[in-house]
Each structure stands twice: as structure tokens, then as C-alpha cells.
Amino acid sequence: MDDAPIGIFDSGVGGLTVARAIRAQLPQESLVYIGDTAHSPYGPKPIADVRRYSIEVLDALVDQGVKMLVIACNTASAAVLRDARERYDVPVVEVIGPAVRRAVSTTRNGRVGVIGTVGTIGSRVYQDMLEVNERLEVFTAACPRFVEFVEAGITGSPEVLAVAEEYLAPLRDARVDTLVLGCTHYPFLRGAISYVMGEGVSLVSSDDETAADVYRQLVKHDQLASPGAVASYVYEATGDSAEDFTALANRLMGHEVRDVQLVQTGVIDLPYLLAAEADEVGRDGTVQP
Ligand code: DGL
Image 1 (cartoon, rainbow, N blue to C red):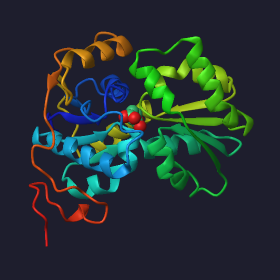
Image 2 (cartoon, rainbow, N blue to C red):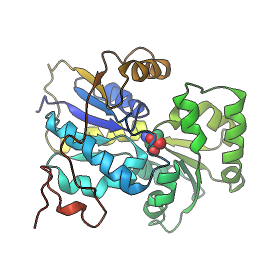
Image 3 (spheres, rainbow, N blue to C red):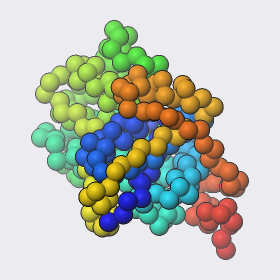
């Protein structure tokens, strides 16, 4: 049993979909959520920058005493997963593996589509993980404007449908029967995406799958909160406006996000991390021999 909070991180508000799914599946667990609004969006940024921002936020969560880290951002998961598992003593859950496992068990015709940010699709992480299974054919599309719509609080306009049609037509033409929503923001556009793809296409969303993985990991590490634990929820953002974060979160999620605190990450001035040197930098910023 362990009543410490679970640390959840995303570039902004999108990871709240994962936080909500964890709250639903594990109501006795306390959560600390950080949205790295100072650096969002991650999707169009070079993967090396995303790695550095992600590690800074994950460090901040570990400093707050979390028992588990959840990287609730596809772009960050693509950038930092292996480093995070090596760097931290607490278990690390990310969003890509759970969605991949669900897609593999869902597809009937072996044709799987994946949509995500430019960073996630460019990293080819979904293709690499799915194509381990030789019976699968994978088709991908980056959908950068989807994040813009969600961040603007627009989820149902005719413009969303028109853009969805443009992005998704190649995947529909490829006759995928399963589509992975490989970005935290896309569950907010589920209606438009499902409408364009048609009812026969199963949508796999990271939020529920990741929450189920969190459950599994907590059981495995004997870390479930005690049965009488009263959960607390802390929301933090790194940008300069708690009000903006709260307003967008409430618009998208209902009124479950309150009292957003502003935090600073990267207080320890980490050397700029390149892929090759990252493993040698300790959490105190010193470079290990
Ligand atoms: N959270 C990001 C993801 O899931 C989308 C938003 C962004 O680009 O920062 O990939």
C-alpha cells in the first residue's frame, strides 16, 4: 500500500483525458498533474527539445514525492520513454505501449491507422512497435491542426469536420479497421474522427488503455492506495497564466480542474541534453563519469 500521489504530465491540458480516466478507474488514488504550458505545444518541436522539457517536468514531479510517473503525452512518450525508465526509481507508465497493445488485439483485417503530432508520427515509434507483428500493415497521418482546434476550445465546428476529412481520407481509403488516436487531444475530437472514418472503424484512445496500465503497474509494485485513502488532486502549470489553463481545462473537461498552481521546471540548470549524452547526466545536473 502506498498513499503517495501518482505524477501525471503532459505538454498542456490534453493529458487531463488520461488523468480523468485514472480518476475513474482508481478513485482512491491521489494525483499531481503538471501541464508544461511554458513549452507547449510539443508536437512541432525537435525531439531533442521535447526530451529536455520532459525530463525537467518529470524531475519536478519526482521532487514532489510521487510514487509513479505517467507520461500522458504521446510526443513526450516518443521522445523520452527509455531515458525515463532508466533515470527514475519509480515506475514509469507511458501512453504508446498500452494503445499499441489494444490496437493489436482490436484489428480484424490487420490494417491499422495511427494519427498523431508531427513529432510522434516522425519518430515512427508507433510503426516500430506495431510492425513487430508481421500480420499488421500500418498507415499513419500527422494531424497538427487538430491540436490547434482543441487548444482553441473548438471541437465541433464544420471546419473541424473539413480538416478531419482532409487528414483522414487516406487512412479511410487504406481500409484501416482500427485507428489509434495517438495524441492526448484527439479524444476531444472523437465525434468528428468517428464520423469521417465510419462506424466500422474502431477508435483506440490512449486514455482508458493507459489508466488500465497504471492499475496493472500499481498492483504489480504493491503500490495501490490504502482502501480508506481520501484522494487529493493537484493541478500545476509551468506557463505564466493559471487562469488560461483553468479556463481551457474547464471548457474541455467540465469543472473538475480548480486551484491551478504555477510551478517552475528546469530549476536545476541541466546541460542541454543530446541523445547520446543524456544517460550520463544525473538528477542533480552533474555529469557522471
Ligand atoms: N500532448 C501532445 C501529444 O499527445 C499534443 C499536444 C502538443 O503538441 O503538445 O502528442
